[in-house]
Length: 345
Image 1 (cartoon, rainbow, N blue to C red):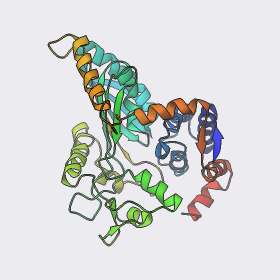
Image 2: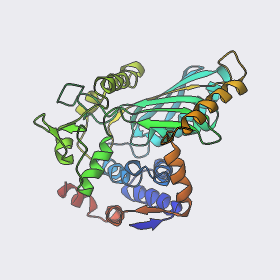
Image 3: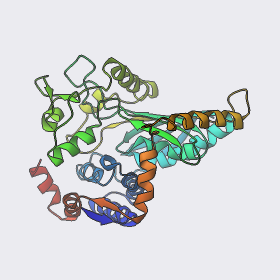
Image 4: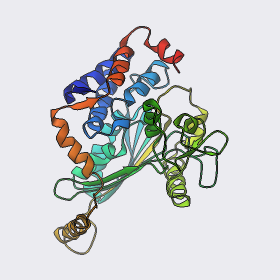
């Protein structure tokens, strides 16, 4: 393992993307996104993601320079056309306007269209939560998940995020795939030579497997059987047809086979608690704090996001990166890196 400061993570990400040919604004936004994830020890969305970003820049799939455009369908329904660029810059363009609209009118929604999404959803909504809003976020993922009872990919990993502005300046935010595991987790298991837990996936033959390579060639499974499957289909609908964007299956049909993210959309919904409810805001926030306190009082209970906050505090002194991953990233700036990665699979 190699220790890097967070500023080094940021600069390495930005400089690698710029060397690959990505525009300065996109490279800076992705660097901020990856650094936040790495600081919270969300490894599957940290520096590891840089490999896929670079692949999509070099393959020509993602637009390198096009800037996102914000528009208002109504005062509370916002849209960002990402113009087939990566999502982080589009999110930074749209979320401040989402916060303003929700604060003004009590509720607002933001749809991001035609983006390549590769970031952690908790990071996408955290600015809205820190502004005192409750918020949800949804996006489809790579089409690699079979519905409950099935064996062939039909849906994406389809993550969901929700956040609440508390407790005590450490907002309650959860973010999870509706599949048994995110595809990135399976890829990290494959790289580490580790087996998958039972129940995560089936192989190309439809039989259960714990082999990450077989899982990636076959299909991941929803978490919680039919319940996770229903949630995953909900995400397909509201992050696809509802906002006029692609389902994961449609996105797969236009993929070029590189290691980067799929094309699609993202939906945000934000609510200002100050506008809702009959009791005072202070009383309702106190009720929420009581819920959190009672949960924490039970032995073994950990609230969502507490692990990340602890990691964030530790990361002030730097983060540990696998030496092999760091070397792989540093070779991306070499003239022959693209060919080497293609030949290596």
